[in-house]
Length: 328
Image (cartoon, rainbow, N blue to C red):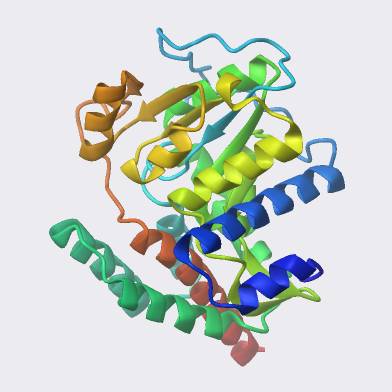
């Protein structure tokens, strides 16, 4: 995808600091998003209606700022997991692949166990995440990008409509109705992020970019996972490219990991927040929206889950392709 970018090639081949990898991941995501806009100036999907699965059109909660209509310098940025989707996008991908016979029960059990460890201990082992990421990216190396995209399309055909928070969906629609650009920003693989954004009628998506050349994965990421500071870097990079005024933009997230992104914009919103983000929002006077109706949403640890997002997506695709080839 970005193999022709000489600067990115040099940076990915060298050992860089965490901040440099985050900056590179952000630039890669913004470059991919802008390229997608150039390739498809008109939305491929029909305009979003804003309707929920019940057929009713949700309304944005009272107390939100009113977006200025047709402001070319304003946009909205939405996190995905537990902000727009109930749960984690990669979890649905894994379950969908299992239902289609691409993953075993052992694969799903391992994924669930890794989530449980984070929820119990609340800490992550960076070495473990790195090892898992490298292993999974090694498995997917050489596989066709089109194959992963096709698998993601099939899995998310029905998931989005059933798992969207109606309240957050209304906020998305509020910005779309005002003629603003709306972007999904997620640590999930770009292939998954684009599908979800398209289903919701969004302008586009910023997601983790896996390096590819000649339509095949190289087994490396461009920079790092689009997580935490990398999300902020992606939003900042896209704002520069699209000439957005971040003071006139809005951002929405459920996680304290996204405080860097929320702090960039003039209208930060906290949606279904974790405890740390709720405390930070209160201290900063940020608006809080909770659509969980008295129950806590399932938490998935990041960057562990973010790593699993790329990893499980890559590993699941590799497993699926290997099984398909064996059956052929």
